Each structure stands twice: as C-alpha cells, then as structure tokens.
Amino acid sequence: MMIYGVCNGAKKFRFSIAMAMAILYVMLLTLSIVYFASFLIFNVSSSSISMPPSSSTFQDNQVYQKEKQLSQQTSTPHIQSTISCDRSHYHYDLCSINCPTVLDSKTSTFYAIGPTSPRQFMQKIRPYPRKWENFTMSNINQVTILSGPKAPLCDVTHNTSALLFSAGGYTGNFFHDFNEGFLALFITVQLMSLTNQDVNLVIQEAHDWWVSKYKNLLGAFSNYPIIILDDQKINHCFKSAILGLVSHGFMTIDPKLMPRPTTLIDFHFFLDKAYNKAQWSILSSSSYPIYPVRKGYNQNCQTMPLSEKIAAKTTFDSKKTCNKTQYSIPPYNLDQPKLILLSRANGSGRVMLNQIEIIIMAENLGFNVTVFEPKPETPLSEAYGLMKETHVLLGIHGAALTHLLFLRPESIFIQVVPIGTDDVAEMCYGRPAKEMGLQYLEYKISIEESSLVEKYDKLDPILHDPMSQKNGWVFLKKVYLKQQNVRLNLIRFRKYLKYAYKKAKIFMYKVG
Image 1 (cartoon, rainbow, N blue to C red):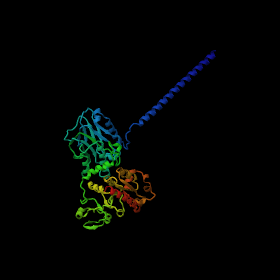
Image 2 (cartoon, rainbow, N blue to C red):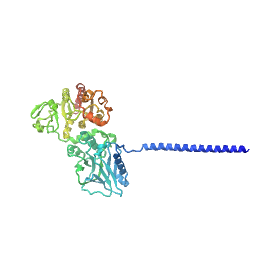
Image 3 (cartoon, one colour):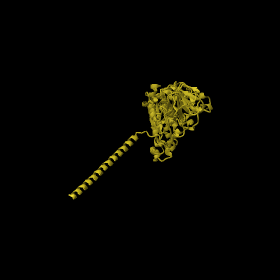
Image 4 (cartoon, rainbow, N blue to C red):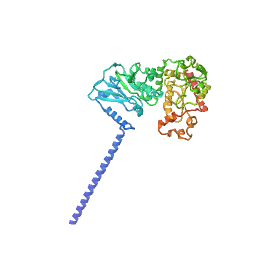
C-alpha cells in the first residue's frame, strides 16, 4: 500500500508538471500570435501614411524637415483658415492668404493682417511649377508668409488680390515661357475664378525684355500695372493673395480638375483675344527672317534668289539694306493653302539639311510657303499674325513648335520627330496638338535620315534602341537634340505633304 501511494503521488506530480508545461506553451503561442498580428497591423497602417518625398541630398532632407515643422506650427484655427498651403502635388505648391495682406517687397514677405496670437505662423514657397526638379527650384527665390503681431505699414493700397509667380527657371525658352508660365497662369486664374479686374500680377525675376515681349498677353490677365518684385522697395497692401501657379503637366489642361470644362482650345481663344487686336504688318522692319517663296528679294539692293539666301544662311534685315517696302510677301493665291515652315537654319541641332528641296516640293504640290525662323526678340503679335492665317505648320521638334497654340482648330500640324525624341515629341507637341483639335501628322525619321548615322554605326544602340541609353535627359539633350540634324527622304516625305495638301484644301474652303 505504501508503494502504491508513492507511485500514485509521483504520477500526480508528473501530471502537474505536464499541465504547467502545456499552459506555458499555450501562453507563448498566444503571445507570438498577438505580436505577429500587431506587426502586420502596424505595417498595413504605415503604408497609408504620406511619406516625405525622396531626397538626393542630406541638405534637401533638412529643408523638407524644416518646412514640415513650419507647416505644423499653428497659432489658432482662424490663422490656419486664413493661410493655407497645398503641397500635395507633383508639379507645384500653392499658397493662399484669405485675408488682407501686406507685401514687404524688400524681404519678399507677405504679412497676413487679422487676429493674431503670441505664436508666429510661417510658410515658405518657391512659386514656380516645376517642383520635382530640385536643381531648377533651388534657383527660384523663396517667398515667406507670416502671421504675427508685427506687420509693416502700407505704402500703396490695392483693391485687388495679388497673384505672385516666378519668371525664373527656364524662362527665355519659348516652350517653357508657356508651359511653366502663361498656361499655368491661365489654369490658376480659371481655378480661382479671377478676372482681369480682380487681380494684380506680382512677378519675381522678370526681365525687362520678357515683360516687353509678352506685354499684350500679360495685359489680358490683369488691367493693372505689373509689379516686378525685384524692383520694388515699398510695401503693397492687397485684399488677399495667391502664391504659385497650378500646372496639370506638360502643355495640357485636365478638364476634370477644372471648376468647369476647360481645355487647350479655351487657352487658344484666350490667346486669340489677347493678340487679335494687336496691329500686324509684314511691311514692318524686323530682325528675324521671313522668306517669301517664289520671289527673290533685294539684299544690298541686288536681287538674290531665295535658295541662295537660305544656303548662305544670311540674315534678312531690311534696316541694314534698302527701303523696307521692297520686302513684302506677295499676295497669296486664294486657291493655294498656306504653309509655314519653321526653320532652324541658324539653330544648334535639328537643322533641316535639305530645306530648299522641301520648299520646292511643297510649292510644286500647290502650297504657298513662308519660311519662319523665330528669334527671342520676335514680336509675338507678328508671329500670331502669321500663324492665324496659315493652314499648315511644319517643323522639326523644338521649342518653336509652341506656336501651334496660335493655330486655328482643324489646322494641319506636321511634326518631324528625330531619332530618340519620340516620347518628348509626343508629350510636348503631339498630345497638345490633338487636345487643340488640330489635324496632327507625325513624321518619324528613319536612321538613314539622321546625321547621327555619319557618327555612329547603324547597329549602334544609340541609333536603333535610343531607349536603352542611360542618363535620360542629359544624354537626350547632348546627342539627340544638339548633335542631330535631319535630311528628309523626299519620296517618303512627299506622301505626307500630299496628304496635308488635301486636308488643307478642305480646311481652307471651310474656314478661309
């Protein structure tokens, strides 16, 4: 009996140990499950957090962290509602001051006037819609917005809102003047429902030549004198202010992002309204070449055929030769569609090497041709006058093709696309042409039509696989834009011109 009791006690003891181990195992298993579930929940929730943009330098990250801290500083709910900054977009930042404000021109600082608190509220913005490009944006001057107890007194009071933007960046390139400038300005004004009676334009980094060149267009946005921030030493007071410009991407307007359906066609008619009243006379002297085809003209008072003029790449300047009335484009034949060829004869890269042959071929097909090589000093009202009357615009990919914005809807637009420029050609001009309702023809050159074939082997990836090249835009600009010229295949290109002629005749009889 004693032996039985001892054995029975041992069995109970072993049973208790087993139970304890089982309970411990269950507890450990439960803890593991809880930990693993917590880990999953944390990661899922973290993926929905808006992370700061990636930065290539420690300094950029410091700037971001500083701006983040500033944006998180809040004085009162009222201050938050009167100053707001939207930094959620890829192309731009936009800040608004929804109360009276004082602009201290000397420090490029806007002060919000209204209820204040002991704690100062501050935001900073670089008002140029190319936000993703760090190098470019680093050269755009910052503007500060403050709300606090100290604000300077007004020197000049405006009964309007201020709209501030920068004319820095790539200003001077015709494409960028519109893409980051006037098209973005048009979108912003439409979004804010502003009229030319409501807004004062305040512009940073605007050169005198730029203001002079675009004075008609700037005047269409505002009836008031432009305030060039860099030239000011006084304080301006406004009813409210908008800082920055809205961009929907490269040369486009997204109707879904507008308060009412708006497209590039609306922008075209805005440009038409701005320049339609401008006086345009082809007899006026100019420093850019306009070549009337079929007619020679007098240089140094001696007749010189057009073909020799283009081949010699001389500059047509009536002021330095004979009386300007000798250089008029002859009256157009009403039965001939008008074709403008945008020339790059004096450009860096993408020159049409057989331009004379193309002109002769276009003439033989029945076009009345004008060769136009725009310069930075070209009055935009005169360029508008040319584009408004033409039926076909032809040119090799480049900034001058931005003149397509002046073409009437249903005009024919032919873009010659050099090797390696397919994507950028479509993005900058192909897609906008379609959005504007133009009849778009894209002529992609073959390897044999590129001057690069003289420098690289035909089997070189540079020629037959441009997309495989590294360094993206840097290589594109260096090789495909700067080093490449074009010699069009006359037989192949003739088919495009012949098709364009048929379309142009229909368009001409339809709208004149």
